[in-house]
Image (cartoon, rainbow, N blue to C red; front, side, top):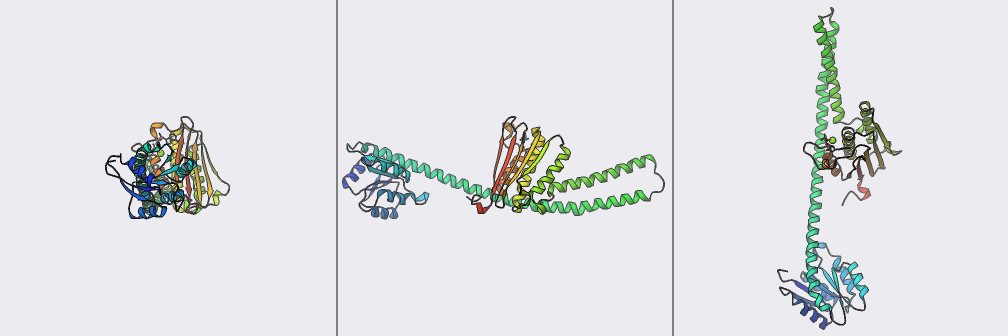
Length: 374
Ligand SMILES: Nc1ncnc2c1ncn2[C@@H]1O[C@H](COP(=O)(O)OP(=O)(O)OP(=O)(O)O)[C@@H](O)[C@H]1O
Ligand SMILES: [Mg+2]
């Protein structure tokens, strides 16, 4: 201890208080003492000033030492003083109760007075323990605040992303989409009014342009599907996932792609941002499974009720190589999943084992479940 600490001695026995004072005087630098003979007096002193440690006798004339202890440990963490309980040799069970009630340590006043030698060590250790606890508590608070700020920031980013995506999709659909339709109509009109067959080179080029227009229309549609998951807003998560898996199955007919919703899940709706995040997470997890795992089967499970949802995407593929679990520059899928989960206050986990497949899990609870906050 570098600065002199201030210790409150709560004991109605003057001799016992003197024993404590004398034992503690050995500390460097010597501590300052404030004394109280009763529980009420102790409470008064504690109101007047802060203490680094309280030595509290279990037997007090006006109240049970354990009651006073409980009142002290019920204070807010930052105002909590470490309490060392002093018990008689005949009531050791009190020590156990004291520790349960939040005492930082205890000392048994044995008849031979051997406990006196332990007082300085116990007090010093208690003060240090308290400092460590407080530092840890502050760090936890800072971390919780940081997490909250981060999830708020992520939430705002996700809202912005959604607005931008919506605008982009709208523009693509209303402008490029319309232009392509006009090109298609104009081209068809041009080729249909041609009377004589054109030279072979012109015919070849005409067929090429025809195919390119079709390709452009398909590509715009594909981008629109990626930007705005079809059916999600109108019919909900299960319908949108079903649609997603069906279109994947067209390309991956060698993989057993299966949606396993709980019986009534198709009629369930969750808040729009939760459905959107869950869909995007599922889509990324399915893409990863198809792209990286070599799986023979990919299973998507959705279950829950209005106030909760569990989504799982599991494959029976190779599992994620351990070195790939840390974020890799340019690979943003896994990071994106985590951030989307954070933004809706959901739990997200990825379980994976070599050759044992990968399971991505999302668990969301609405506010009425009381789990999302905190
Ligand atoms: N289901 C899976 N099975 C096996 N490996 C996987 C699986 N999911 C992810 N991985 C591994 O983890 C890496 C990171 O995945 P992540 O989705 O973050 O990036 P990516 O898919 O490579 O790129 P993108 O940014 O386009 O998503 C992958 O490159 C792959 O090696
Ligand atoms: Mg990916």
